[in-house]
Each structure stands twice: as C-alpha cells, then as structure tokens.
Image (tube, rainbow, N blue to C red; front, side):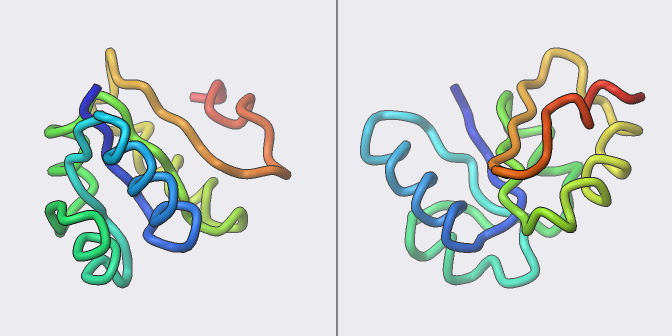
Length: 100
C-alpha cells in the first residue's frame, strides 16, 4: 500500500506516523499546513491533490468533518479508478462517497 493524506491535523499526523512505523509506505501529505506533518513522518509535501493521488493507491481524507464533502466534490472528478479512498470522520457516513 502506498498511502497519502489529505489533511495534516492530529488524525493525519498520528495515523501517518503509526502506519509508517508499521511498514506502510506513506507517500506524503497535501494540506494547508503540510510542513509539520511531512517533517513528523519524514515524507513528501504535495502541492496538489492530483499529484498525491497519482503517487498513492490509498488516500486518507483527514480534514475536519465540515471539509470532507468539499474535498470529495473535487476528487470525484479526478482519475480515482482503482484508488482506495478513506475518511476518518466519526460523524459522516461513507455513503457520501457513493454519490457521484
């Protein structure tokens, strides 16, 4: 698995660090403040969702709950075929991703 993160808050930091320490290849982070997450996990900073999507087979959306729909509305128009898309919200159902 080559996992990338959109959003670099506490969840993205922690999950990325955990996965990396347990043998998962972390491609990097795309975020409003990516420097600290990339430093924390010693991974790449991405300047666009398209680039991190291209380099990753799994994307974790770890933005605040209120931003998940906005990110998904953008991503669903990209080439996401054969990509695993995960979100880490406790309040939003994954069915939001089935509305294309």
